[in-house]
Image (cartoon, rainbow, N blue to C red; front, side):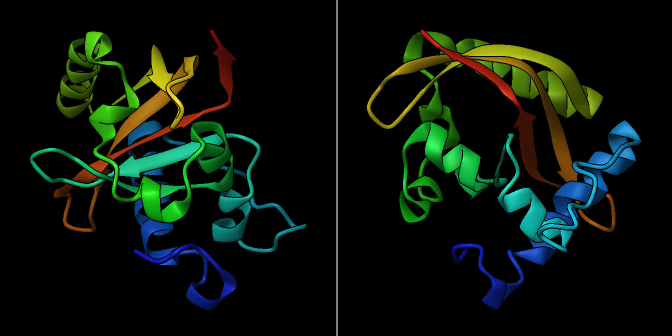
Length: 155
């Protein structure tokens, strides 16, 4: 996947997948359209909160991060979209993360996740009140998972 820009409409197809899944499962929009950025896709990329997603691989790999996520985790776009999502957590916290993702698979989403993650330089931070949801294509098939959060604290 290429870096989100005007040239690829900030990955509008993937944003549509995330937004439509969020709306279907939570009954809300990911963000109110920001007139300063004009489009949902651009607004989400420049949003003040973190939004990430990963694919359906056996060892899921991140396939989207907005600018806030790239800055928080400290990765370039090319590095982030090659990162297995499990590596965003320390090994000691990966079992907890696996349980979270299994619960999201069963329920469709959770809206009160809290957990510790790592930056590229292994700095730990606590995510608070994150929403994690399944991505569902237009036929209702599982297409990955995404997370949105605006509260974090470095440890």
